[in-house]
Each structure stands twice: as structure tokens, then as C-alpha cells.
Length: 345
Image (tube, rainbow, N blue to C red; front, side, top):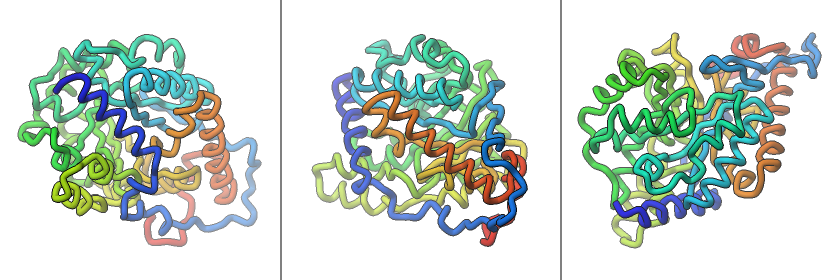
């Protein structure tokens, strides 16, 4: 695909996501059905609650992964740098968006050593598309993705629905599990398998773990709908209607977290997809996630400044802290056992 077309598509995606009313999934992520039992006598001090955790051998100040999204190359560079700076300030993990153009040597978009210099102490995750693995990419491209940003791990993102409704999408998906297994065996970095908004099932999570994957990002339904995003780009009314038909497709995030944790007790589980605020982060942790990922909610800040990103995640972290306080949870281990009033736990 011509470079200009890829850049234009990425820019379109970014602009559309910044209009959330257009692309929010028509299915609830499931967090609203989860209610904590309130602890009227918490027996903990709010300011002493420990939200820290370990991920990829590094300490995080809070169990949050900033899942980034890129646009046109100059814009992407600014966004990536702001996200990296915010991640370093708060001690959060950072996952970059598509590295396809950079891997193909057609521009970096900020996907270079500047990210590690801006965020020397936090986990940084590189990104490669599952569709690219089936189009001939392999170990060399994966290594370039990791090395160009000095990443701690590599995300393989899985987006079959988006590819199916995208006119320029990749339709051939047979053999991807074997390709992921080969990367897990040979790359020398942990592999994270990630959906992009339609969810991972427990059954697939188990197969991915058996293939050598280290972590699973469920990225469930309930947040940004990539089928709806592609529909906004489509001029053909028939194709647009088909994309919109699948705007509510997928496994709601809360269920995906629970099911993947049950099927893969040893996995590092990342709960993303419709994570709106710190209370959703708390619910994701309680349902079985080790980290919660957020992308679209942080994007307006990232399009503005690093300080805006920091302010956004400070609010999320404070909300998570209050959820811990009002469940009597001094740390994340206790939060995972906090009583619920719903059937979700």
C-alpha cells in the first residue's frame, strides 16, 4: 500500500476517534454491572494505599497501560513523545501504535530512541500487526520493531473484524497462531497478544498461552468500535452499512477479563476496552486483570500536551485510590479480593 495512503488512513483514524460519539461501541463494556461492597470502616489510610505493581521486570506506580494511537507521522511523533513523558512522570507502562511505516523505513513518526530517552524507567511495548505477520513479516521485522524503541516486549495486535470491513484490509489469516508461536520462541522478548476492541475469549487465550505468549490484552467490546471507525471512512453505502452492522460485535470487556483469567490463571492479563476512569480500572483489577489499558480516553490530552496527559492519568489514579479506600483495600492484592454486590466476581 502506498505510504501516503497509510498515513492518510492513520490520520483519519485519529480524527474519528477524537469524536467519540461517532465510534463508541453500541455494547456496554460490562463494568457498570460490577458493584463493590462499600466499606464504611475501611481501616486504611487513603494516602498510604499502595497502587504499585511489577510488569515486564519494571515497577509501575499504578496498574495502568497507556495504549497509544497514532495518526499522520508528524502528529504521531508529538503524541508518542507526550505519552512517553507522561508515562515516565507517573510510572505507567506505554504501548506504541502501529510501527508499520517505521519498520518499512518510510519515516519514524517518533518511533525511535527518543521514546526510551523520554521514559527510561517504564515498560515500553512495541507493536506489530498480526496481518503483517501473514503478509511475509517475521523475526527480522519484529526485532526491528523492538530495537527501534528499545522495547521491553512486543504486542501482536489482532484485528480481524477491522480488516474484514476495511476496503484495503488483509483477508488472509490462516497460520497466524503458528507465526506467533515462532516469535514467542525466537524473539527473545515477551509477546503480548492484543485484540483491538472485540475481545479475547478464554479459549483463545489458552491457545495463545500454550503457544508461548506472555500476556493477553483482552481489548473487549464496549469502548472504541473499529468497525464504526471504518464505517466513517467508507463512501460506499453498502460497505458502510455492513461495517455498522458489526459496530456492537464482540465480547464485553468485563466478561473477557473474567473468562481469560479463568482459562489462563498464570497469564499477565491486561483489561482494556471501554475503561473510562479509575473506578473501571478498579473493577478490571477485581475481575482478574493485572493492568488496565486506556487509549481513546487519553487521546484528547495527548493531542494537546504531555501535561494534559499527566493530568488525565492523575485523575484516573486518584479515582482508583478512592475505590481501594472505600473497599478497605490497602493494595492491589487486597483489591482483587474485595467483596462484590454483583455476580461478576
